[in-house]
Length: 168
Image (cartoon, rainbow, N blue to C red; front, side, top):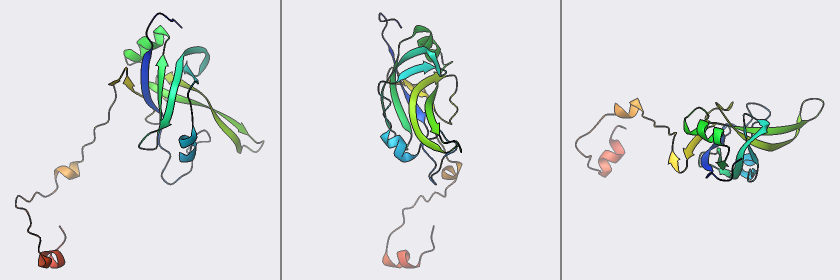
């Protein structure tokens, strides 16, 4: 990694929010409690989980407002920087080590590394900010909201229309 170039700062989602009902989609997935206690600071940032291809360092991780695991990292390897900047590599993938019993039950789960990749396996795990600029956002529009009835006249609230008016 070159020390003469300024590192590229990235932020994004390393793990989506866990299901509201609890449980895991697969053995490597994290629960809300595990996301809350995960600290990726200082972990290697790899390209496509290749331990021979270290491209940077994770600076911090924290639970996002939606329950996801968010990260901030520096990317220092020039080809990885170029690939992220041009949009080819915008996925994030968490490298999880699992120690299992002979019956396949997980005895211990730990985060080994974080990788930049073309596309993360878990849904919505991607780089969303590069050098402080948002590069991925989700805009939602509800057709239902657009077709909601519009009343140009404000309703006068009286005890009678509160108690006896049909719901709107």
